[in-house]
Each structure stands twice: as C-alpha cells, then as structure tokens.
Image (cartoon, rainbow, N blue to C red):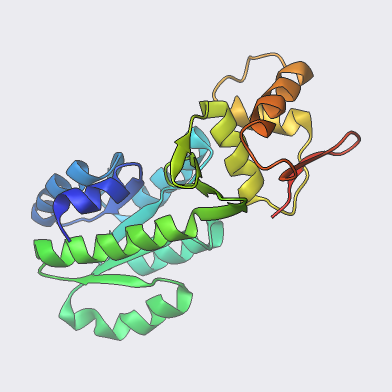
Length: 237
C-alpha cells in the first residue's frame, strides 16, 4: 500500500488520536496529518472522550476513526473505548498496544474493537492497518441505489455507471440522511434542520425543501424517494 493510494481513501476522513507518550504522539501525528482531513489530538482518555462528544456537537457526526493507546492517565484506552461504544456502536477504533498488553486484547475484541497496532510502531504497519480500516469504512459507505446508481458516503458523491453526478452540499447531505435512516420518514422540517445544521437562525421554508427534492428526483432513479404528504420523505432501498 503506497502513501498516495491510501490518501485517496483517507483524505476525507476525520480522526481522533489519543496518546500520552509525547515522543510517539509527535512522530505518529506527522504521518496522520498528511493522510486525514481532520486530526484531533488528546493526551489521555478523559480528554479524548470530551473531544469525541464535542466533535459530534459541532459537526452532527462522529469521528470516522479513533486511534488510542491502552495505558493512559485519568481514563485508559479500554475504558474510553467502552464509553465511546455506548455512544456509537459502529465506531471504528484502532488500539495501540505493547506486546505485554496481550492480556487485554480479548476484552477489547469483546467490546467491539477490531483493529490493533503493536508498539514499537513502524510505518509499514501503520499504512497496512489504516488501509484496512479505511477500505472497510469506504465499502460500508458504498450504497447501490439501483439502475446503475451508487452513492459513496465517504465522498458524499453520486455515481451513475462510474460517472460522477454533480450534487450540491445540501443534496448530498439529504441523500446521506435518507440512506443512513432508510426505515425512517423525515418531515420537511427535519430535513431543513439537518441540512442547515450550522445555520440555526435560518428561517424554515417548506418551498426550499420541495425545490430540493425536485432537483434530486432528476438525478436519481424515479422511484427511489417516496413523499407522503402527511408524513414526509423516505428512501426505497
């Protein structure tokens, strides 16, 4: 796995890195900031958990990946991971462990951690682990919409037979919301609030939502989106 190949997958992802070892933190950060869109840093599990919650409040989404050491003051990597999984069961967490930490690995696997890197970290292992996790993340976010249409949730991009279809930011956010909640019907107000999350003072307009879906229907399979006048909008997947 080359650096450039990995970056094509990782460049749109947000990551939280939690490590109390100053030297390891600095050396690993030099690699991470070249690969990921956002890299937030915490020096212990308590700070990491606080950043995790703050990130959601600010972005209405979780970090794509969390990387954490096991042994840290205040809140160790195992306890922090447990708390994160209580918040988001699907969170991807990579644990950095020493050889002597093998006794903890079964507990970590049981709570949902799937990926590990062993100290001392070497660049090749970092690339291999990140490649596997990022590729899994992307595959989980590729959704077949029918009639040759695919939505890449990682890129927030729509494709028809491998050709990218231009979407506005609000259009891609709407598709993403419906796909992630395919068994849910959203009112116009729900959708308006979601796509204007960072504009809390913006006045609601049902006409703007109607116009949004009119544009989307021209870009998507005809029967993909259902509109119930009393209930709202949902997706047929």
